[in-house]
Length: 374
Image: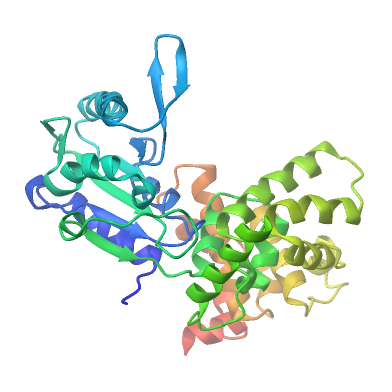
């Protein structure tokens, strides 16, 4: 089966935005939990999206939200509510792309899938044509992954573009960087990308089979396991612990982490987190050596990308001139993300080149500069 990276699927979705509505294809992304199938497409449209979860089982009554068994009435009511929200949003933003996101498509019961088929196939929702500025994206977990997926209908699948998403750890790490998640989590996963999914295959060839086994074991034994989703949740939890300034012991932190990312990764994470990271100013002043431990290296790089300013840029450039070029690339990517987040900077690299000391970083005496010259 041909696999696609999340980035390739997103590129295809962006392509649909440029096509006339009558020629657009709905896109269905199939992949394991926590692979970014929900979050990544939303980056295309920002806040302009409406989500319909096909696995929802509620209906709204006059007294509020009541839970009920799915049925024809439930499907009609749910679709009408979402349709109004979508049409209103599309009408209010005629010059922008609006996304209709069908979550857990393969987890939906047959009635929900049949109801959504008209959206995927013919761009029709509750008897009305979708507005021209709407794009349709669906996602779901594959059968056999122990995530409750149902059989899909051939005539539906045949009329939309289907992407089976690879599990690529670095895609998840880059997203975490763009969201400025906890630095310790990013440093750990940057040093050990395979820990994102508890995979030991560096080429990813066995990732899917390993994940299926892990999901089955997790369900049978009620155990947590690492995914992009669980690491993200843990990053927010770690932020809360650090901001509280609570004196949390290693044993307690391992317990908290185990409840989210699983016991094995929790022990490994806490052990690495306790590494002795060199003092920043000692590194810049040359009184401390650049670390050789990958976790410590990434920690220093992430810290510099967050703290470098006009006053320290020359010292940072001179320091990074002696560092592995791969680390420098990570630093530049992080710094670019930070500059974009801090202001409306059209070309953050143009700002970089005007900083004192940047010439050291791209000069012939720099390891990074030598790679650029080659």
